[in-house]
Amino acid sequence: MGLNDTPNGERVHIGIFGKRNAGKSSIINAITGQNLAVVSEVSGTTTDPVSKAMELLPLGPVILTDTPGLDDSGELGKLRMEKTWQVLHQTDIAILIVDSTKGLSDTDTEILNAVKAKGIPHLTVYNKMDICTSHPLHLDETDAICVSAVSKMGIYELKEKIASLVPRNHSEFPVIRDLVKPGDRVLLVVPIDKAAPKGRLILPQQQTIRELLDNGSISIVVRDSELEETLQSLPQKPALVVTDSQVFQKVSETVPKEIALTSFSILFARHKGNLKATLTGTQTLESIKDGDKILICEGCTHHRQCGDIGTEKLSAWIRKYTGCSPSFSFTSGAQFPHSLSEYRMIIHCGGCMQNENEMKHRYRMASDAGIPMTNYGIVIAYMNGILERSIEILKGKY
Image (cartoon, rainbow, N blue to C red; front, top):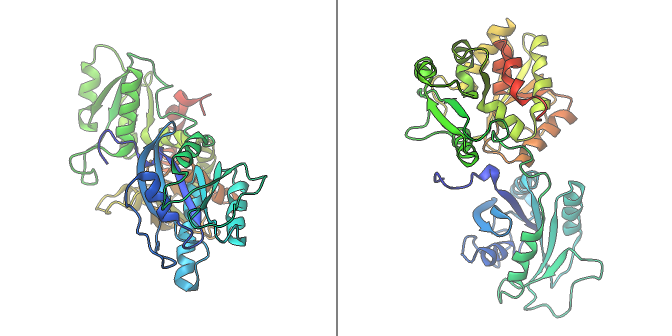
């Protein structure tokens, strides 16, 4: 991803669903004007979700995701269909592709019902109108359109209709811009250790800096090792200090109490709409016992290294804080257990790589299972006795 690209987690996610050989891949290619997806007469050509980032005005930056058919068969087909349903959890706008020569099937109706149950804006697209001998639309289908991916009939109108759909609650909370004013100095503490990516900043740091630039605020980025010297050299104190969670305690001891302090992870918990749940879930640390299972979820799929915050530091800090020996499990990327009943609590990263729908889906799954869920920054602040200070600037804004 380039520095000026919109992060995938911030794009509107458009999921393309339907039966095998309905023409989903052909529609993706027609919409983008590129041969991105493999097209074949053989059913089941798409075996994994395939995504393409693009601009679709007036929506702006979007991700189109082509999915395997939901009428797949066999054990392998079952695994493919599970991946398709996972895409639905991330979807802001759902597009159902129907083979117009065969009409709406029971499988298509099942997909539509699942989309409607989630309240997702949607559109039914009757494809292959170049070979259809009758008009497939019913009078009550106001959210439908007829097209041909081969002749390109109706493709322009399809893009216009998609762009007119409004995703629900997309990016309800900003990252930081409502917490500071134009001209305010904001000090960002970014430790550079073995786990830091070589030659670049991680996504939460990039997004925070970009919002501050758009807001007209002044970003000052330092390592934790230069924090004290930087604070002393500033002509006026910063309006806010934002730190990486793994140096929370050190930064809290360095930054004077009168200066507001929080972490990137806490900002992203609010940005994804999960801050209330994370604050409640953290209290579970007080009742952890030996052998309790704790699930630690990393949203991205980076290579784990010595000193990794998720797999090494966080588990060690929890053992020290609780004085117990819980059992830890770890997931990364799109992996998230279907059953959560075995876990005492779940601790998630800030979720910068997941969109808001995916994060809310994970929190709903935890809530439905009665499992408390929180995140890295909240837990670390809580264990260091600085949680109240860390969320003070956010009060009344989540």
